[in-house]
Length: 403
Image (cartoon, rainbow, N blue to C red):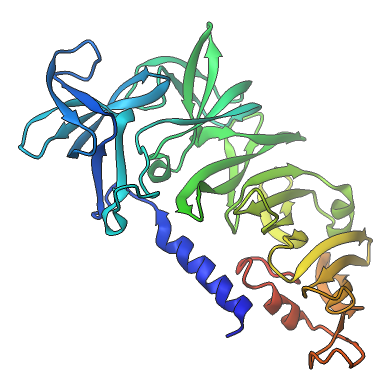
């Protein structure tokens, strides 16, 4: 196994080990995170204090209540807990943290405050593909303050992440109602959408796993592409993306309508584990629509960029879409050091057969020195469909570089 393949294997293995997915993980225990924390008779800051628990005291979380508070700028639910000596009561969840006891150390980086609500600025217009309830806090157990009907478009202020968002597969979003911040569950929220004829097409994104490692704590996201009728307000189709994503946008491109002889929807899908460096890819996929606006099938996908931190690297230089062919030209390189070795352009050609693209040919101007001897003249490297797909397999097992 080469050093590069070994690194890729270890990278994936470590992320898998560090992935956190469920409250029910038996290796997880809870501890008090404040210097001292009041255990109260009822889930309220005004309720009678029964006793105090000191920092790092282990507790059992019996229940997560629907009572939320914002204390010291932290938004969190109240928890029913049981102490080591069997006494029960309620504590503010913003000061209860968890960590994996298999990795437990006094100052472990794996500890985090599970019950705190994490927020990020969103400031985006959304579309509702179903009726949604509006809550006082980001919980279905919280007080309902209003309801918004299907088809409404309005601007949300923040995207809210809670630990159980992964289990529920839904973000929460906040907006202002009569001057007060309120919350909706994201299960029926389209965060990027467009209207085409009598249908709306939108992206519903949801968290799939929380990853902790390499000094970072981040959420992996999955997405659905939903089409809905504007007249009936009913969902026409739901299409899951093949891979996890950081952002998804949708648009149309009349070139594909003409080539495939059908209305088409183009989905741009970005995936990047570490936002500080380009590790990941951008891929676009063309979906075919039927006459009612339903997404029928995937017709074609292609990479626009593959992050240069993982070699090889590829970036789309040009794309020609014609009635008889699709031609993609990529900048490509795979080595570190001499820019004349392992770099060049790759041209991928598809011919259109029965209104669908069929791979025809691949041309390469990439030079290589297979022996590694610096005295030898670099030779032109030829690629096949299988060989180039194999080179990029470690980035995505779901999308082939060449279809």
